[in-house]
Image (cartoon, rainbow, N blue to C red; front, side, top):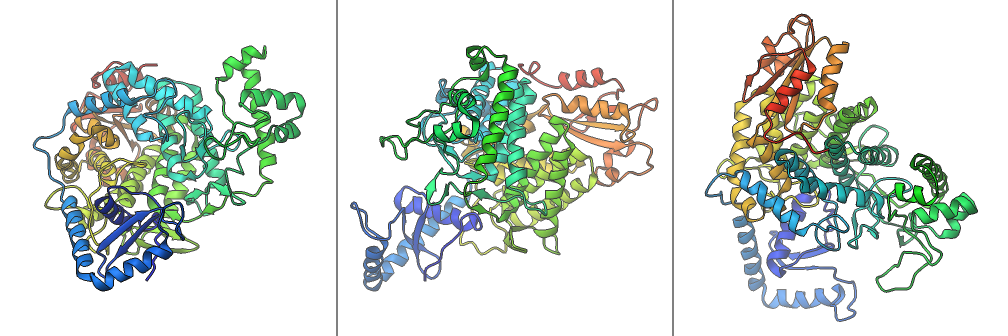
Length: 627
């Protein structure tokens, strides 16, 4: 019986059998072929098997008959082998706790590892292929903010500039491609994934707050523009991906000949644009390494605009206006091409990442449109991907939702709800987060070993795994730890805090073996180690002094803060029902007032914004962020 599995719809199955492939062959990859017994025990695994044998590779049409003969003559051996694989996987799911808790030393080790493998010429880490891995960059930003070590910021800035100017970024329509096949961020795999857009929006937004560099803010906004234009369902949810190929050719939608550019922009403008974006007559794109040039070009900037402006005897502002005008004309022309296919399924976890990104951007850029999009998507998920009993579902498409939610769905939605609360100050988001946290603990927690299984206690996966490695996206356990701790501090829920705190010990042994492979986990650890603080602002909603106080917090890089708003003028506002400790928070002298709190203890309240910021800085271990 042949079964094809969409690994994005069933990541639980993908995780188990990819682990089985590693156990059987020592390698993995997609597309993955697994042969298993009727009771789900795998005994054969391989990747990239062609249909027919060629170039020394055995094809499926030859492989299956051979295995059939072995099955008939040595069935017991195959079943025993499958049983051994499953036992090994079940053993690996039992996470051995560390001998001691994690401390700041593991943060230092991760930083030093990233520093050693940093590509000082091109940005990013290691050699080709290069993946964006935004959580590495966010970890470095927060580590630099904490310690004052300037190289942490340098690595982030170099990488973000290189990606924005490289071929991995769609210079005409915006948004990031999946990864770069080379070390220079030049030749991408042209697929676009929702989760990459979300995580990169977060990285560029945090980098803007930390450094003040406008290019980072512009890149975050451009990426959001792409998502809202091309990846958003009319009802508010976000689609999963756009394919790499169209008309049977990878990248065809995104590539340009110089004649095409001149045909759209005219001779003079086309020549200037081509110089800025590395467009040549022979082309800069090869379909395969070593193949001859095709005349087609990937658009990238090898130098910043300021350098080109000097060469053209223009101001940087005038050149920027020229580039934008040319981009718009090229975009209009490109829209007439056959587009890559769109994967229009809507996944709870990936949507949650985009919701969190939009909420962060809404606060940082003071943009209500981003908050509106985040709230609309949140409503979509909660209305369409939540069962009547309150439990989440994983996938929605064409009016039909289904599949049991994974740990990622719950953890990422907790993250999203906290971010949307901080952007909107609507208590219902914290209330929903508390409900989901209750479900997560009840259905996914490993009561014996700590941490969370990827699947619920009533799921059908053959092995309940407990992932913590932060790969293309952060792991559910990494996100859950940080989100539960943040939610606990915002609602004074000591049980949730204890659950999160135990996870540090649960995964200490695993994280200590490879700190740089767990950077989102370490971002949560850094937050938990402290000092972290809650700023409770109370004032009249919409009043000038209230708005000014909140805006002062949001416009600065304060990654170890959580902000709660208690509206004045109401005897028992809704936030008191969710965060009972705000009951006695009151304004002073009828002015907006801030309470800066750490470990459930608050400083003397203040109505002065500068004093509020001083109190927040005094609780940090490091100097002010490097700008």
